[in-house]
Image (cartoon, rainbow, N blue to C red; front, side):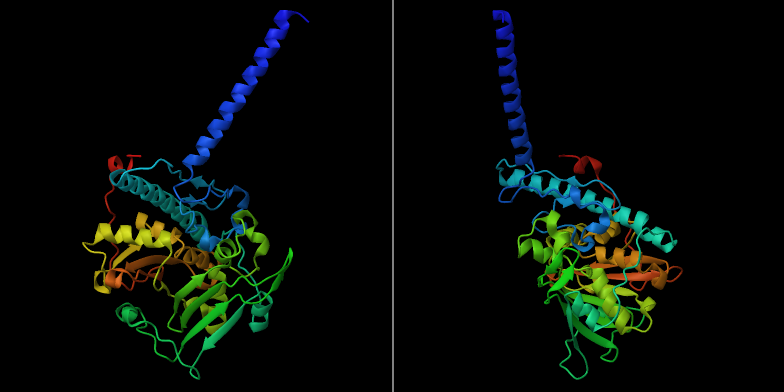
Length: 383
């Protein structure tokens, strides 16, 4: 072998080492950019497609609010952070950019759910079949759940008084004790799925059900949340540990369908005391822009339809997404609706949301919708 040939091979080997080292540095840099201070690396959600395989009600986790899983075959869009320490001023700018990016993702997701999920369902063209779990307590138990009902023979849990004005404004007025029940549903039993026997997750869904056409959720911790936060199950493995009945929207409809003789009469969906980080930030941002104070009583409420960006974002947030799935899965019972969402925040720390599922051709219960806000592209493009 000639000296020139040996030198060429040596140079090629050195070049390969240099390229490998540069690629390693590049990979490390990308991971750092996706990791905000004090948080773990981004979870990869791409393998959770199709949409039917993921938890529709909790697609955003409080640990990773920047990860937005877009529905209906869309790609996931991780929002990157810089790991570089920054001053108070630059931190404010950083948070502002983050909220702007999160806002855009929520609006996009809400639009897709509405235009590609709900509207086709109203037209009888949905690709999603209505879940059929069966009926009765035995079915609920076999899927890992136990329900406890407070009725006239037990101490009735009252709807909080700060809801009085909102409920009086509904089509049927404030619910009376007759036709009102508070049901606690907890996944406190083991169950079997396609992967074998699974232990209880400790998930819980508590809600009021009124024959006046109202469901009000007061407490909601999904199996997905519990599996990730309590048991440390990686997101990609969560579906292996889920019961067939695990979505908030499905559990609510299971109870509602068993309680009401006319399930298609459902008109209002309310969420009491929202604490989810993503939903809370969203409501705060909207109210801060629309009202001079974050203490927004019912009289100062703001209402949006799904023609607005706010309405779409609220539909896509963790406390609104159940509405989309109720409309998609049960369009045949409910019929076409024109949903409106109203938000308020009594005492500045008690965020509320109520959806008026207005039948097409009827008037909404809570007044006119807010006018579309003007956005500044120059301001939002500063990232």
